[in-house]
Amino acid sequence: MALVERLGNETNIGLKLPSGAAWLVVLDGDHDFRPGQRVELTFDPARAIIFGSDGVARHPRA
Image (cartoon, rainbow, N blue to C red; front, top):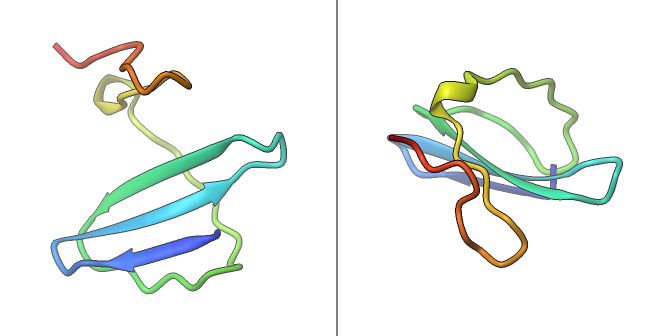
């Protein structure tokens, strides 16, 4: 985990995956994560928004 932003209503964490890909994860609520901490995540694909390297959503939510 490279970045943790605790905003009160949500927590944003920036992840660097073993593949080198970067992910931004937005979690509801306030979570006490620390940079460098390992996390295991699951997600609901129906709620995910995936962006390409061009910044355009590949699978925008309906």
